[in-house]
Amino acid sequence: MSRSEVSTRGLLKQYGDILRELRSRGVVRSYNNPAADIAEWIGAQAFGLTLQAASAKGYDAVDDGGRRYQIKSRRITSENPSTQLGVVRDLAEKQFEYLLAIYFEEDFQVRAAYLVEHRAVVDHALFSKAQKGHILHAKSALLSDPRCHDVTAECRAISHADGSRESASDLQHTAESSMAQCACGCGEQTAGGTFRPGHDSYLRAAAERGAGGVIRLAKLVERAQAFVDGALSLTEFGEQVRALVPRSDAPAA
Image (cartoon, rainbow, N blue to C red; front, side, top):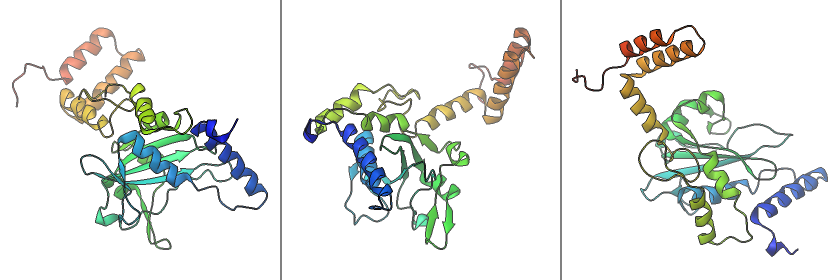
């Protein structure tokens, strides 16, 4: 089989195997490249982004609404399992609205991907004096932040596309075939995940409003867990829910 007949996914796997062998022979010292270029390609296809020239300061792509995206990647290997992304420079200047972080397996398949709002990057990244910029890791504090959106499914839908030398129409068909309706209720389509980027926050906000605030919502979860654990009877659970949740026909305060 000639290389032109091998799928893009198959070629990337072969490339990963070749990199490992070259490193064992001392020919190359790093596994990193071409992760950055592949991440930008995946991000553009998954979210309909337009990649920018290298001269664009602080961002790599823009969407149809003009929002700017900085795209970072990391290839996880058995020798180096770190989740540290490349340095984010001039963070205070807000040169992007979203940071798209894509983590690859050794064979360049997507392990995980996150779309992080700029403010969350500011709150979680640590400044490195030596590197003259901010360092961001995919740690639990960041991943549990509601401003960090898991977009692994959307990115995998692109990286797992089969067929050699896919055309733009082929890639569009792959994305459309894996689409689902966004669970926030907006009526828009996702690229294979549960939500459109950032739309999980809409559903979270609606749930908080419906419960009468985040504190009541937290108490509802506690009561539900107590009911499941058998600490509350069905009658007790119902009474406590009615005491917590405002009636839908209740006049506004």
